[in-house]
Length: 233
Length: 233
DNA sequence: CGAGCGCTTGACCGGCGTCAACACCCGTGG
DNA sequence: CCACGGGTGTTGACGCCGGTCAAGCGCTCG
Image 1 (cartoon, rainbow over the protein chains, first blue to last red):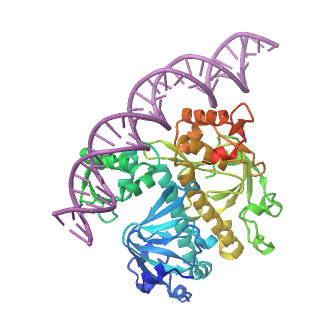
Image 2 (image 1 turned 135 degrees about the vertical axis):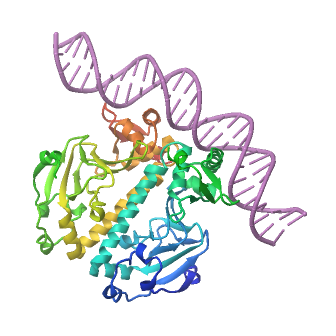
């Protein structure tokens, strides 16, 4: 069954050949012959902030390429605590794991307004066996996901509260405007860094006081990076 | 260039058809036709405890299937601290990332005496394009590696010191003897759980005092699980 | 303009880190 | 066979970072 939320998120069917971010994504170097292998529609979907895109353990029909916005991957531990294992940004793939098991290993929730395209599993499977270009791309996406997961553990969940918050500020820099960075609701940041929301708030305040960051809005979501050095140790 | 350590670790060339753990590994369901596609030798290697198998960033000639023993994957953060991101056990693949980039993303170090087989990248690449069975297996190994990475973060690096040590005890259970579990040098355990070695030691002592664990040797490496419930919360 | 939610700040407390002493295992050499 | 020494694990005392609890503030949206 197709959840209602997906129906209501439907914005149309994509023409991937003319996709604006095609150079970042799975279909980056497909040729005309490869495109002719696509027999199911690629849907263009969008979700408001806080919307669940898929849940942990859910049966997967397809995977998603993130076109715009940010998505958190959430795991619930056996004793019920929630942990954010990663944040995905444009160009990343949501739900790669479904290729192997047809189930999602974590919950995906929109952190901002989000736009994605859903690619049916059958399309990925037929392309990956028949197009060496797709095969290679897919491998690179797996490798990137694994590296991101390890980075998240090694860089953001290690050291003092100050180091973690500073590390997140650097990781969440805007690729187009390297002087600005994005934060999230304080309790989400806590679930990312294994800190309490009060501690996150205190450390951000301290970084602003020390001149490392300066707020760009009144909601505490966007900050200017004033002194990169102060964030790096 | 081939490092000297590899030369000295060489034990022979494998006959994968008769491998004792074939059902766990990449070659699990290859048929005779698939095997005929293997044109480079699969080497059988072994390493003593504490030996480095490969280093972070090193150029990769092949990847490894772990046959016996345990291996830690170590990352060094930009400011020089060392973090253990995962522990691999028999059946796991070392260096999957080399398939995409021909470089290793982390350092691999033997935690015990270890035996592995090295499969040249060319063999994997030709099999994965020509054998749908291998293609599927590879996908499953990627998925497993990613899930392990996320598990490690969500389960072992979250909560109190007690919960982390207990979680590691459960994760490191012997698959054949579910009542026994393996620990490591206390500072390695600290690097896995983001705790200091003294804290690890204290928590283990507390678990023994409470009757959850009982030591099986005098070096503090193997413990009997006496009360699973006490470890689970 | 008031209600409510999320962010910040303060005071206090507890868990983990730090520093140090000690116990134990094991290999080496007398 | 035992004496010695280094390496590793354990335990204790103490201090600090981050958690807890609570109050206050400032947006945002009815």
